[in-house]
Amino acid sequence: MSTEIQEKEVIKIKQSESLISKRRRKILVDPLDDNNPISIQVLGICSALAVTIKLEPTIVMSISVVFVMIFSSLITSMIRNYIPVRVRIIVQLAIIATLVTLVSEFLKAFNYEMFKVLGAFVGLIITNCIILGRLEAYAMGNKPYDSVLDALGSSVGYAWIILVVAFFRELLGSGSILGWKVFEAIGWDTFPTNGLFVDSIGAFIILGLLIWAQRTRNGYIEN
Amino acid sequence: MQQSNIYIISFTLIMTIFLGSLLSFTRMQLGPIQKKQVEIDTKKKILGAVMDISSLSPEEVLELYNEKMNSIVIDLEGEEVLQDDGSKYVAEEVNIQKNYKISPDQRKYPVFMFSSDGDKVDYYIFPMFGNGLWDWISGFVALDENLNTVVGVAFDHKAETPGLGARISSDEIQNRYKGKMIYNQVDKLVSVKMLKSENNKDLDSHQVDGMSGATITAYGLNDMIYHYFECYNPYISKIKSNTRMLTFNR
Image 1 (tube, rainbow over the protein chains, first blue to last red):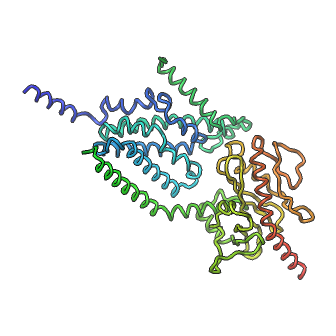
Image 2 (image 1 turned 45 degrees about the horizontal axis):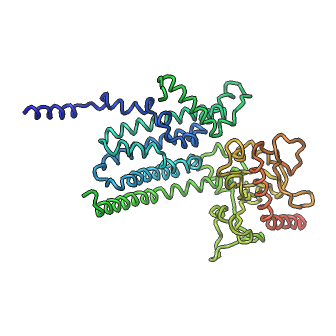
Image 3 (image 1 turned 90 degrees about the vertical axis):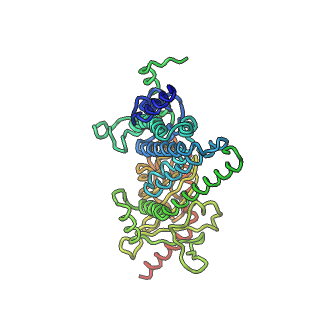
């Protein structure tokens, strides 16, 4: 008798969990800062270096990653109980690869200039360890809505870091923001642009400073 | 049940067929749009060698191109090449990269001619292809009606170092080629050479200031331009002698 009531209560709590309960907010917000895929987990570094020379391609890349991440998580989570365990990685990869190819095809059709700049890197989203990592670690064992939240958190956590890196790289390396010459606009024509920031070394420097700032703020202690 | 081989095989089979058809369907739907984008891109590059088209919309570029641009596909002897059924090749569709890989006498060379009044040719545009430091570089070099002075160039590259060799696709570098000569006073092919290092003084009409930190890319450009003008040379001399005959007869 008593167990029945308890069971009912549990079900009641589950049903009434709000769309943005505390637990869900944690799923969403954690990867933005405390558990950031790039700065804490150090995943997806290669693309953070490669696409962040200019801000505009970085924005396109961020949108692509968010799109691929959310939909691959959603699909994987929806069919998670049907995926044979022995081939699950292949299935996940096939889902990611299909979505990435779709993004790449659409980019080629509707923004050819951007496709020429990003071409190879969009294809390489497939190998972005953040996506496969979240599918394997989260979407395979959780319900669709939670998985989408988790995917959104991780991909936005990735996106804001590469956007910050790209902002400083374009500013210091090319002296512009989104192609608009900032320093000429404020009358500083002789601003010495630094070739180091156009190279991937610049991305390492900014990423390092970013991790430093983040760790100082969060009081991180290496153990 | 989910662990049985039959289940796994049928699952992967259905997945593959589904994803495969999804992708090929998208490809079929987007194919024509993509083809148009590539066409606009090529025509932009060709026109970009002779004029500033940055303010034109893609439709205006196509319109201008179709109105003012003529083309011909020639062989190493400078003769026009026709397809097996006697029809003309579409010069825009000749793949310079593929042609670069076969021996010069087997290649097809497209030449584009810009004429503002539809009669006299104002500019000749020669596509070319070569090797930079990391990967291929390509270009369109536009000569004036006398086939000697460079009116403009448009270079492209696949993977030259950003900020160093990649500068060949910037206006800053491309403007350095304007007004330079391909042939000397006695009509011998000299081509245009980009020098090593930047801020060189006393450049003659066959020299272009170099790019500091990108000497190999610059030498790649030099080789590309010289090699292709060697290949285009028979055609160029033919046109020149024709014009000379015309002036003489008059």
